[in-house]
Length: 336
Image (cartoon, rainbow, N blue to C red; front, side):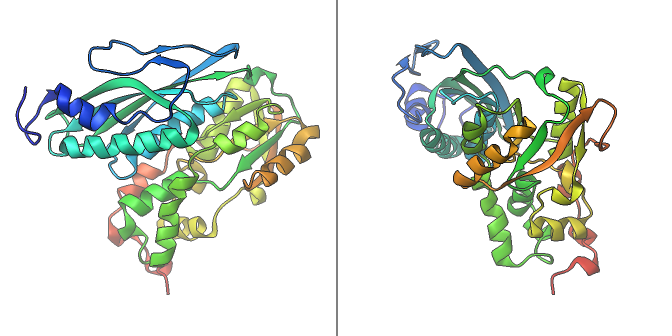
């Protein structure tokens, strides 16, 4: 149905598709022989010499601010964890009419800029305006070549588990963006802005690239946080993990907030943290590589037989926390 930009429903007409979507193409890749265009049913891509193709898909539901950047990174992280480099991204945008073409243009510009930074091309997708939803739904599908075949069954007892950055990185950033009212009596305005900036650390590409030739397995712990990610690794590898709880990386800002709001920091969404399992004899090498790459990291535990080690309670804390009323912040948690 065609109308003005504020009343459109369904697929965008060609002129607006060119204006708001097709001009945002990310990186220019020589492998992309035929890219997205009006009337093109599919892109054509020539693969390189890598023997394997890593493919993944993830959505962003409901978010508006920073949604394009987040969409690229959460998809690219999955390719990075398979030892690959993101090559091309397919984007589907289902956008409420109330947000309009302006939102589509801005989110595609953000997607394109982020893709350019990591070297990925935007090669197609679907875009439409709808009255069926009141919040946007963004879906990415990403492909990238890799020469590494990781299999969690190859994890061995005694292997070391390394974690980069600090837990709940993404969850805290979401709280700072979407519920700053929960944080204002706990953190200063400057500290809240610092937490908001943690979205710039969501990519795990830098650390995955320096570890991919020595890691037995790598994982990006998203929903369920660090404990959820470790539980998934143990489930795949039929193993357990013994954690050094004192070594788990928690930012002092995160620690203050979790004490006040009462959430489990190890079960909060942690995109941006790379969990890598490496042979014990390569731990020092791995940590040195990460240090040289400017990525903070530490060994947090080791692999043990199935049924042994640290109990990993699963679940996601963000959605409960983000729904708290402001009055739920206890007096003892307020910033002096």
